[in-house]
Length: 146
Image 1 (cartoon, rainbow, N blue to C red):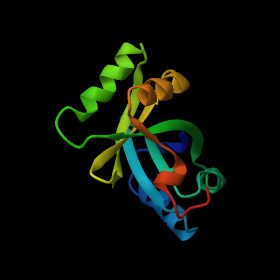
Image 2: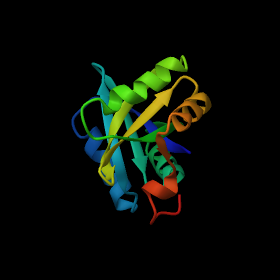
Image 3: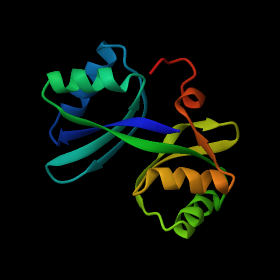
Image 4: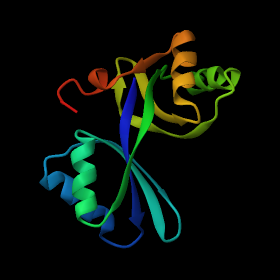
């Protein structure tokens, strides 16, 4: 139920993001979704890619600092209050959101959000018990092997 996410410590200078994107593209790795949180000199780029392990190796070979973490993809009703409903479940289970971002795809009529919680297993259990659909890699990437 958890997905592998690639986090990259990215220097905030012209061309660095393009360099990373070109490296992945030149090696046939597709970026499924992306989030960039910046600070003044460095940012944290979070990616869901078609082959996380290969992407990490490629980036490290080129001097990027990369790490694989786990996130949960949750199907959320795409209407006012959809996110609030997920957060109510997590609050009741006393779980904190470390960060989140939206997926670029939808699941039917629903949006898909990615979450990192302080207790990932507890979060999955709480969400599923409340009737939320936690998507696995096969549901999100039916045509990829990783």
